[in-house]
Structures are given as structure tokens and as C-alpha cells.
Length: 417
Image 1 (cartoon, rainbow, N blue to C red):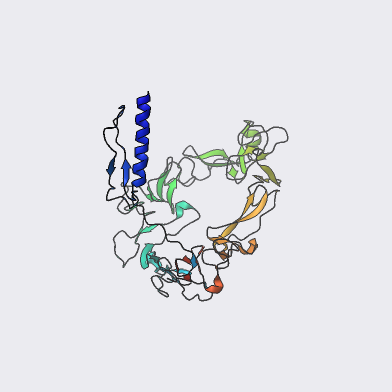
Image 2: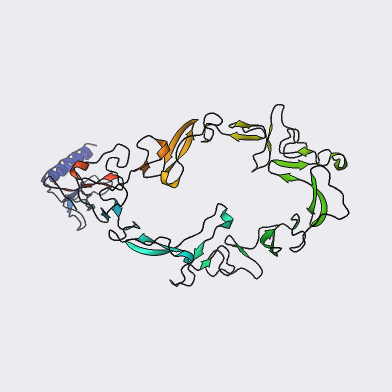
């Protein structure tokens, strides 16, 4: 035990001595045989590898330059181009993406001015590039999307891939013979049949369509030998056959024969409003709970636990008063604020209180929701990145991409690049 202690002490002193003599850039490594009580030689010196730095550590990437001084000139690709008819800001134009100043101030990419060519141009990496322009409808299935399938500029985006059976959804995607292209997909939805007759073209349910009952060309007419239909009933196409009696239906009025006595009173029950037959015959609501029909979904008994019943008479709706901007906090309270595209925002209801939510990069800095989010936080030097965050505009510091422009310092003076 004494010998081991003595050897350990000598080793510690020796390592300490060598460490004291080591110079920068030299690693000191003591090589010992594991489990040995003796030291067979002095520690060996391992020189640093060429990849290591002067201190023996692996080389590190250069640190990011410290941007401590304000910049007063526009860095590429930003520029200050004339703003005709609007307020302009320093370095407000990105020459790589600005359609009105593409690559240089005043170089405008033509907008959608090609008429039937369905084509426009936009600025991509500082150059005007062609792109196809769709015709968007409120009904997604009626929208038109165009493509340049032949690669020729002369005829623009010549193919409507929404309804072209030879290019359905994409250039070259041909539908099987006899199948139409509808909203970019081949064929009709399940249960529907494609018809091109009787003055209309489209997909129809031949089991219930009065103009195409059982086949595309079979138009129903009231039976010649039939008398007036019972109350709330009509003659029509039922089960692909004409001249059949059926209950009438319409907006918030779906009639049904719940007492199974057509001869007595026809279709006597409005399942859109009857709390004893809500949605279907026999579906009874709890006492005092109304049958609600909003015209877009199946009638239901009352509202969900997180909803309140708003409206009167037959104009009843279920609304979440915590989140509905048209009924915020109480029924009928509509949150104020612009909703157009130029408003760059929309009113919202948060926990029953009205607020106004801005698009990314825009701010409601005047606190007036009626004029929307009027401030462009990306370029406004008085509201840079956030309302009230002012750049040193007096010294000429611009707001670029929502940040006050900063540069490296050179002898304490601003470096403008």
C-alpha cells in the first residue's frame, strides 16, 4: 500500500511539473498501463493536429459580425422607389419580388392584362415570370384553373384543367371515354350520372330528378288522370319513376308523413321545426327545447353545451358566444372592423370580447378597427416590426423586413452599404 501511494504521489508531481512547462498549442498526455503500479517512462507529448487551432481546439466557424451601428443606405436587394399616390418609406421596395419594381425601380411586371390568355406575370428573383391566372368561384367546383400545356407563349395558358377531359387536373391526364372532367377529376360522384340533354349538362341523380328521371332524357309531367295532391305533397320522380307522390321540402321546411295517413292530412309534419319530430319522425326534444334548423345541416334539438340559442321565431341559430364575431358575448353583438382585403385584418371574438386580428406584417397602430390594420410593420420606420417601435429615422435609418437596419461599425462611424 505504501509503494502504491508513493508511486501515485510521484506521478502527480511529475504531471504537475510537465504541465507547468507546457506551452500554448501543445497537449500533455500521460500514457499509463492500466492496472500497473509503476510508471515505465515520462509522459509523451502529442502535437496538435493540423485541423486544430493554436490552442489545440478544433477550428470554429467565424463568428457573426456584430451589427452595432445604424445603417442609412439600402442594402441589396432593397431600394427606395417612387411611390405614386401613396406614402413612401425608405428602402421599402424589394427588387427581387416587387411587381412594380422588378430588378430595378420602375420595371413593372404586367398584371393580368392578357384577356382570354388567362396569364399574368410576377416578379421572381428580380425578373418577370409568366404564371397562369385562375378564375375562382365561391363554389369550389365551379372554379377554373388554367395551365400552359403546349409551352407556347402565344396562346398563354390555353387549357382549363378543371373541365378538359384530355387534361383533367393536370396536363396530359386523359379521362376514360365517356367520362367528363369535373373540378379537375374524371367522372361524376357516386350515385350521379353524367347527362348532356334537356338544355343542361352535368351530373344528376336519376332516381329523384324530375327532368331526368331514370334516364337523361326522361322529363316527368303531372299524371293526366291524377287529382290534386294531398297537403304538402307533390307528384314527381321517386325511385326513378315519374308520377309518384312525395312530401315537399324546401329551405327550413322539410315535410313528412309522421302519422302514416296521407289521405287524411298528407305530409302534416315539418321536421325542421317540430320538437316532437325533429329531423325525423319520432325524434322528440326534451321539454322546452326547440328544434333548430339552420338550413345547412340536419335539424337538431337545442344547442350544444357551449352554444347559445339566438334569434326569434323560425330564425333560430346556435352560436358560441365566446368565439362568434357576429354574436360576441351576447346574441346579436357584432364585432366592429373592416373585412375587405385592403383592411389586412378581420374582427374576432376572444372569450366573449371583441378584438381585431391583423395579417402577419400589419398592425392596427391607431387602435381604430374600422380602418383595419393600416400600418405596414415591415417598412414603417415609426412602427417597425411592432406598433411604436421607432427606428432612428432622423438619422436616416430605414425599417427593412420589420427590423431597424443595423450594420457593422467602422471606427465608431456608421457603415452604410
